[in-house]
Length: 354
Ligand code: PEP
Ligand code: MN
Image (cartoon, rainbow, N blue to C red; front, side, top):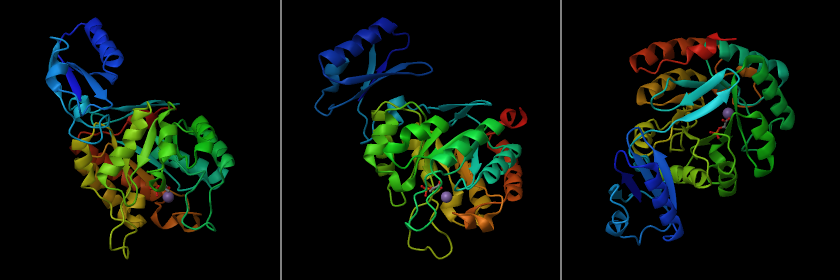
Protein backbone atom coordinates (compact mmCIF):
# COMPACT_ATOMS: atom_id res chain seq x y z
CA UNK A 1 0.00 0.00 0.00
CA UNK A 2 1.27 3.50 -0.68
CA UNK A 3 0.23 6.85 0.76
CA UNK A 4 0.71 9.79 -1.54
CA UNK A 5 1.22 12.92 0.55
CA UNK A 6 -0.03 16.31 -0.61
CA UNK A 7 2.54 18.66 -2.13
CA UNK A 8 4.13 20.76 0.61
CA UNK A 9 3.32 18.42 3.50
CA UNK A 10 5.55 19.50 6.44
CA UNK A 11 8.30 16.92 7.14
CA UNK A 12 7.24 16.77 10.81
CA UNK A 13 3.74 15.63 9.76
CA UNK A 14 5.27 12.81 7.69
CA UNK A 15 7.55 11.75 10.56
CA UNK A 16 4.63 11.68 13.00
CA UNK A 17 2.51 9.69 10.56
CA UNK A 18 5.31 7.17 10.04
CA UNK A 19 5.79 6.78 13.79
CA UNK A 20 2.05 6.17 14.24
CA UNK A 21 2.01 3.53 11.47
CA UNK A 22 5.00 1.78 12.98
CA UNK A 23 4.04 1.86 16.63
CA UNK A 24 0.26 1.48 16.59
CA UNK A 25 -0.36 -0.21 13.27
CA UNK A 26 2.71 -2.50 13.32
CA UNK A 27 3.63 -1.69 9.71
CA UNK A 28 6.98 -0.84 8.13
CA UNK A 29 6.66 2.60 6.56
CA UNK A 30 9.30 3.81 4.11
CA UNK A 31 9.61 7.42 2.96
CA UNK A 32 10.26 7.96 -0.74
CA UNK A 33 10.99 11.55 -1.68
CA UNK A 34 9.95 12.23 -5.28
CA UNK A 35 10.48 15.31 -7.41
CA UNK A 36 7.21 16.89 -6.32
CA UNK A 37 5.65 14.73 -3.69
CA UNK A 38 6.54 12.43 -0.86
CA UNK A 39 5.18 8.91 -0.92
CA UNK A 40 5.05 6.64 2.11
CA UNK A 41 5.29 2.98 1.19
CA UNK A 42 3.80 0.42 3.56
CA UNK A 43 4.91 -3.18 3.55
CA UNK A 44 3.84 -5.93 5.88
CA UNK A 45 0.44 -7.46 6.13
CA UNK A 46 -1.54 -4.67 4.49
CA UNK A 47 -4.22 -6.86 2.87
CA UNK A 48 -6.58 -6.43 5.84
CA UNK A 49 -6.22 -2.62 5.96
CA UNK A 50 -9.12 -0.44 4.98
CA UNK A 51 -7.75 2.34 2.72
CA UNK A 52 -10.37 4.76 4.06
CA UNK A 53 -9.28 4.20 7.64
CA UNK A 54 -5.67 4.87 6.62
CA UNK A 55 -6.72 7.99 4.70
CA UNK A 56 -8.39 9.33 7.87
CA UNK A 57 -5.07 9.33 9.70
CA UNK A 58 -4.10 12.73 8.30
CA UNK A 59 -5.64 15.46 6.15
CA UNK A 60 -2.23 15.68 4.43
CA UNK A 61 -2.73 12.27 2.80
CA UNK A 62 -3.82 12.88 -0.77
CA UNK A 63 -4.40 9.28 -1.83
CA UNK A 64 -4.11 5.74 -0.52
CA UNK A 65 -3.30 3.18 -3.20
CA UNK A 66 -2.96 -0.57 -3.09
CA UNK A 67 0.06 -1.99 -4.90
CA UNK A 68 -1.52 -4.58 -7.15
CA UNK A 69 1.66 -6.66 -7.62
CA UNK A 70 3.19 -9.31 -5.35
CA UNK A 71 6.46 -7.34 -5.52
CA UNK A 72 6.09 -4.13 -3.55
CA UNK A 73 9.32 -2.23 -3.03
CA UNK A 74 10.55 -2.92 -6.56
CA UNK A 75 7.25 -1.99 -8.16
CA UNK A 76 7.00 1.18 -10.17
CA UNK A 77 3.85 2.11 -8.24
CA UNK A 78 5.81 2.09 -5.00
CA UNK A 79 7.85 5.00 -6.36
CA UNK A 80 4.74 6.66 -7.71
CA UNK A 81 5.81 5.95 -11.30
CA UNK A 82 9.30 7.41 -11.03
CA UNK A 83 12.46 5.57 -12.03
CA UNK A 84 15.20 5.10 -9.46
CA UNK A 85 18.93 5.23 -10.09
CA UNK A 86 21.87 3.17 -8.90
CA UNK A 87 24.88 5.31 -8.14
CA UNK A 88 28.29 3.64 -8.05
CA UNK A 89 31.48 5.37 -6.94
CA UNK A 90 34.41 4.28 -9.06
CA UNK A 91 37.97 5.64 -8.93
CA UNK A 92 37.12 7.77 -11.99
CA UNK A 93 33.99 9.21 -10.43
CA UNK A 94 30.33 8.40 -9.94
CA UNK A 95 28.58 6.28 -12.54
CA UNK A 96 24.79 6.39 -12.55
CA UNK A 97 22.58 3.62 -13.90
CA UNK A 98 19.01 4.52 -14.73
CA UNK A 99 16.39 5.56 -17.20
CA UNK A 100 17.46 9.21 -17.26
CA UNK A 101 21.19 8.55 -17.53
CA UNK A 102 23.61 7.80 -20.35
CA UNK A 103 24.17 4.19 -21.37
CA UNK A 104 26.62 2.41 -19.05
CA UNK A 105 28.85 -0.27 -20.55
CA UNK A 106 30.37 -3.15 -18.58
CA UNK A 107 32.96 -5.25 -20.43
CA UNK A 108 35.62 -7.85 -19.77
CA UNK A 109 36.36 -11.54 -19.86
CA UNK A 110 34.12 -14.26 -18.53
CA UNK A 111 36.86 -15.33 -16.10
CA UNK A 112 39.93 -13.61 -14.73
CA UNK A 113 42.66 -15.90 -16.07
CA UNK A 114 45.94 -14.15 -15.30
CA UNK A 115 47.41 -10.73 -14.62
CA UNK A 116 48.42 -9.75 -18.13
CA UNK A 117 45.10 -10.71 -19.75
CA UNK A 118 42.97 -8.88 -17.20
CA UNK A 119 45.15 -5.75 -17.34
CA UNK A 120 45.24 -5.77 -21.11
CA UNK A 121 41.47 -6.27 -21.35
CA UNK A 122 40.84 -3.54 -18.78
CA UNK A 123 42.98 -1.05 -20.70
CA UNK A 124 41.38 -1.91 -24.00
CA UNK A 125 37.76 -1.72 -22.80
CA UNK A 126 38.48 1.52 -20.98
CA UNK A 127 40.01 3.06 -24.10
CA UNK A 128 36.92 1.99 -26.03
CA UNK A 129 34.68 3.80 -23.52
CA UNK A 130 33.48 1.19 -21.00
CA UNK A 131 32.91 2.34 -17.42
CA UNK A 132 33.17 -1.07 -15.71
CA UNK A 133 35.41 -4.08 -15.96
CA UNK A 134 33.74 -7.46 -15.47
CA UNK A 135 35.50 -10.76 -14.79
CA UNK A 136 34.68 -13.84 -12.75
CA UNK A 137 36.84 -14.99 -9.86
CA UNK A 138 34.29 -17.60 -8.73
CA UNK A 139 32.66 -19.29 -11.73
CA UNK A 140 29.39 -21.23 -11.67
CA UNK A 141 30.15 -24.01 -14.18
CA UNK A 142 27.82 -26.75 -15.34
CA UNK A 143 30.61 -29.32 -15.06
CA UNK A 144 32.61 -29.78 -11.85
CA UNK A 145 35.59 -30.59 -14.09
CA UNK A 146 35.47 -27.24 -15.93
CA UNK A 147 37.60 -24.26 -14.84
CA UNK A 148 36.07 -22.95 -11.61
CA UNK A 149 37.81 -19.57 -11.47
CA UNK A 150 40.97 -18.62 -9.58
CA UNK A 151 39.03 -17.37 -6.52
CA UNK A 152 40.82 -15.01 -4.14
CA UNK A 153 43.91 -14.49 -6.32
CA UNK A 154 41.60 -13.40 -9.16
CA UNK A 155 39.98 -10.87 -6.82
CA UNK A 156 43.43 -9.39 -6.20
CA UNK A 157 43.98 -9.11 -9.96
CA UNK A 158 40.64 -7.34 -10.36
CA UNK A 159 41.72 -4.93 -7.62
CA UNK A 160 44.98 -4.28 -9.49
CA UNK A 161 43.11 -3.66 -12.77
CA UNK A 162 40.77 -1.27 -10.97
CA UNK A 163 43.74 0.63 -9.61
CA UNK A 164 45.59 0.68 -12.93
CA UNK A 165 42.65 1.91 -15.01
CA UNK A 166 40.15 3.52 -12.62
CA UNK A 167 37.37 1.33 -13.99
CA UNK A 168 34.71 0.09 -11.58
CA UNK A 169 34.69 -3.69 -11.02
CA UNK A 170 31.73 -6.05 -11.30
CA UNK A 171 32.24 -9.64 -10.27
CA UNK A 172 30.08 -12.53 -9.16
CA UNK A 173 29.55 -13.67 -5.60
CA UNK A 174 28.42 -17.31 -5.60
CA UNK A 175 28.50 -18.14 -1.93
CA UNK A 176 27.55 -16.22 1.21
CA UNK A 177 30.89 -17.31 2.71
CA UNK A 178 32.78 -15.26 0.08
CA UNK A 179 30.65 -12.14 0.33
CA UNK A 180 32.99 -10.04 2.44
CA UNK A 181 36.05 -10.83 0.33
CA UNK A 182 34.24 -10.13 -2.94
CA UNK A 183 32.74 -6.90 -1.59
CA UNK A 184 36.22 -5.61 -0.72
CA UNK A 185 37.10 -5.51 -4.42
CA UNK A 186 33.80 -5.24 -6.29
CA UNK A 187 32.04 -1.95 -6.84
CA UNK A 188 28.95 -3.94 -7.84
CA UNK A 189 28.23 -7.51 -6.71
CA UNK A 190 26.87 -9.82 -9.37
CA UNK A 191 24.36 -12.50 -8.45
CA UNK A 192 24.40 -14.94 -11.35
CA UNK A 193 21.52 -16.56 -13.20
CA UNK A 194 22.01 -19.86 -11.39
CA UNK A 195 21.76 -18.16 -8.01
CA UNK A 196 18.82 -15.88 -8.74
CA UNK A 197 16.67 -17.79 -6.29
CA UNK A 198 19.35 -18.50 -3.71
CA UNK A 199 17.36 -16.73 -1.03
CA UNK A 200 20.09 -16.89 1.64
CA UNK A 201 22.47 -15.14 -0.77
CA UNK A 202 19.82 -12.56 -1.73
CA UNK A 203 19.21 -11.74 1.95
CA UNK A 204 22.95 -11.37 2.57
CA UNK A 205 23.62 -9.08 -0.41
CA UNK A 206 20.55 -7.13 0.67
CA UNK A 207 22.02 -6.58 4.12
CA UNK A 208 25.27 -4.98 2.87
CA UNK A 209 25.73 -1.61 1.15
CA UNK A 210 27.34 -2.45 -2.23
CA UNK A 211 25.05 -2.25 -5.30
CA UNK A 212 23.86 -5.59 -6.68
CA UNK A 213 23.53 -6.77 -10.27
CA UNK A 214 20.81 -9.43 -10.31
CA UNK A 215 20.84 -11.63 -13.38
CA UNK A 216 17.63 -13.26 -14.51
CA UNK A 217 17.52 -16.99 -13.90
CA UNK A 218 17.63 -19.03 -17.07
CA UNK A 219 14.13 -20.37 -16.47
CA UNK A 220 12.76 -17.54 -14.36
CA UNK A 221 9.54 -15.71 -15.13
CA UNK A 222 9.64 -11.94 -14.91
CA UNK A 223 7.64 -12.13 -11.70
CA UNK A 224 10.10 -14.57 -10.10
CA UNK A 225 12.96 -12.29 -11.12
CA UNK A 226 11.30 -9.23 -9.59
CA UNK A 227 10.44 -11.19 -6.43
CA UNK A 228 14.14 -12.11 -6.16
CA UNK A 229 14.96 -8.38 -6.36
CA UNK A 230 12.28 -7.77 -3.71
CA UNK A 231 14.32 -9.95 -1.31
CA UNK A 232 17.29 -7.63 -1.71
CA UNK A 233 15.25 -4.46 -1.22
CA UNK A 234 13.36 -5.99 1.70
CA UNK A 235 16.70 -6.66 3.41
CA UNK A 236 17.55 -2.96 3.12
CA UNK A 237 19.51 -2.50 -0.11
CA UNK A 238 17.67 -0.66 -2.87
CA UNK A 239 20.74 -0.37 -5.14
CA UNK A 240 19.78 -3.17 -7.53
CA UNK A 241 20.24 -3.46 -11.30
CA UNK A 242 18.27 -6.13 -13.19
CA UNK A 243 20.13 -7.97 -15.96
CA UNK A 244 18.39 -9.86 -18.76
CA UNK A 245 20.85 -12.53 -20.00
CA UNK A 246 18.72 -14.87 -22.04
CA UNK A 247 16.34 -17.62 -21.05
CA UNK A 248 15.99 -21.27 -22.00
CA UNK A 249 13.71 -22.05 -24.88
CA UNK A 250 13.21 -25.02 -27.18
CA UNK A 251 15.82 -24.15 -29.80
CA UNK A 252 19.44 -24.22 -28.65
CA UNK A 253 20.94 -25.24 -31.96
CA UNK A 254 22.04 -21.83 -33.18
CA UNK A 255 21.97 -19.67 -30.06
CA UNK A 256 22.84 -20.61 -26.47
CA UNK A 257 19.80 -18.84 -25.04
CA UNK A 258 16.84 -16.75 -26.15
CA UNK A 259 17.61 -13.15 -25.32
CA UNK A 260 14.27 -11.83 -24.09
CA UNK A 261 14.42 -8.24 -25.29
CA UNK A 262 10.68 -7.84 -24.78
CA UNK A 263 11.50 -8.10 -21.08
CA UNK A 264 13.13 -4.65 -21.29
CA UNK A 265 9.96 -2.58 -21.86
CA UNK A 266 7.95 -5.00 -19.70
CA UNK A 267 10.28 -4.65 -16.74
CA UNK A 268 10.47 -0.91 -17.35
CA UNK A 269 6.71 -0.67 -16.90
CA UNK A 270 6.69 -2.88 -13.79
CA UNK A 271 9.64 -1.60 -11.80
CA UNK A 272 11.62 1.55 -11.07
CA UNK A 273 14.95 -0.34 -11.03
CA UNK A 274 17.63 0.17 -13.74
CA UNK A 275 17.97 -2.45 -16.45
CA UNK A 276 21.00 -4.14 -18.05
CA UNK A 277 21.16 -6.52 -21.01
CA UNK A 278 23.89 -9.13 -21.53
CA UNK A 279 23.92 -10.11 -25.23
CA UNK A 280 26.98 -12.35 -24.71
CA UNK A 281 25.27 -14.98 -22.54
CA UNK A 282 22.04 -14.10 -24.34
CA UNK A 283 23.29 -15.47 -27.66
CA UNK A 284 26.41 -17.50 -26.82
CA UNK A 285 27.99 -16.50 -30.14
CA UNK A 286 30.28 -13.51 -30.66
CA UNK A 287 28.97 -12.91 -34.17
CA UNK A 288 25.45 -12.18 -32.85
CA UNK A 289 26.50 -10.01 -29.92
CA UNK A 290 26.75 -6.61 -31.72
CA UNK A 291 23.28 -6.88 -33.29
CA UNK A 292 21.71 -7.78 -29.95
CA UNK A 293 23.63 -5.05 -28.10
CA UNK A 294 22.29 -2.44 -30.51
CA UNK A 295 18.79 -3.92 -30.31
CA UNK A 296 18.94 -3.81 -26.50
CA UNK A 297 19.79 -0.12 -26.61
CA UNK A 298 16.87 0.48 -28.97
CA UNK A 299 14.62 -1.53 -26.62
CA UNK A 300 15.49 0.89 -23.83
CA UNK A 301 18.16 -0.78 -21.71
CA UNK A 302 20.11 1.45 -19.32
CA UNK A 303 23.29 -0.59 -19.54
CA UNK A 304 25.04 -3.43 -21.36
CA UNK A 305 27.35 -6.23 -20.27
CA UNK A 306 29.65 -7.57 -22.99
CA UNK A 307 32.26 -10.31 -22.69
CA UNK A 308 35.62 -9.30 -24.20
CA UNK A 309 38.77 -11.45 -24.28
CA UNK A 310 42.18 -10.62 -25.79
CA UNK A 311 42.29 -14.06 -27.44
CA UNK A 312 38.82 -15.67 -27.38
CA UNK A 313 40.10 -18.90 -28.94
CA UNK A 314 42.19 -19.54 -25.83
CA UNK A 315 39.63 -18.42 -23.21
CA UNK A 316 39.13 -20.71 -20.21
CA UNK A 317 35.39 -20.02 -20.28
CA UNK A 318 32.89 -18.56 -22.74
CA UNK A 319 35.41 -17.96 -25.56
CA UNK A 320 32.83 -18.52 -28.35
CA UNK A 321 30.72 -15.60 -27.14
CA UNK A 322 33.59 -13.21 -26.35
CA UNK A 323 34.44 -10.29 -28.62
CA UNK A 324 38.06 -9.41 -29.35
CA UNK A 325 39.10 -5.91 -28.20
CA UNK A 326 39.01 -4.78 -31.86
CA UNK A 327 35.45 -6.09 -32.28
CA UNK A 328 34.49 -4.36 -29.06
CA UNK A 329 35.97 -1.06 -30.37
CA UNK A 330 33.79 -1.41 -33.42
CA UNK A 331 30.67 -2.15 -31.37
CA UNK A 332 31.32 0.89 -29.15
CA UNK A 333 31.49 3.05 -32.28
CA UNK A 334 28.13 1.72 -33.47
CA UNK A 335 26.62 2.17 -30.01
CA UNK A 336 27.86 5.76 -29.89
CA UNK A 337 25.87 6.64 -33.02
CA UNK A 338 22.76 4.94 -31.71
CA UNK A 339 23.00 6.62 -28.30
CA UNK A 340 22.63 9.94 -30.13
CA UNK A 341 19.36 8.74 -31.64
CA UNK A 342 18.02 7.52 -28.29
CA UNK A 343 19.53 10.35 -26.26
CA UNK A 344 21.63 7.97 -24.13
CA UNK A 345 25.08 9.38 -24.87
CA UNK A 346 27.87 7.30 -23.28
CA UNK A 347 29.65 8.69 -20.24
CA UNK A 348 32.61 9.99 -22.23
CA UNK A 349 34.01 12.01 -19.37
CA UNK A 350 35.12 8.82 -17.64
CA UNK A 351 36.71 7.32 -20.74
CA UNK A 352 38.75 10.41 -21.52
CA UNK A 353 39.98 11.23 -18.01
CA UNK A 354 43.20 9.81 -16.45
C1 PEP B 1 28.80 -14.55 -16.26
O1 PEP B 1 28.44 -13.37 -16.22
O2 PEP B 1 29.93 -14.92 -16.66
C2 PEP B 1 27.79 -15.60 -15.95
C3 PEP B 1 28.16 -16.78 -15.48
O3 PEP B 1 26.56 -15.18 -16.21
P1 PEP B 1 25.13 -15.91 -16.00
O4 PEP B 1 24.95 -16.03 -14.51
O5 PEP B 1 24.17 -14.97 -16.65
O6 PEP B 1 25.20 -17.25 -16.69
MN1 MN C 1 30.50 -15.95 -19.00
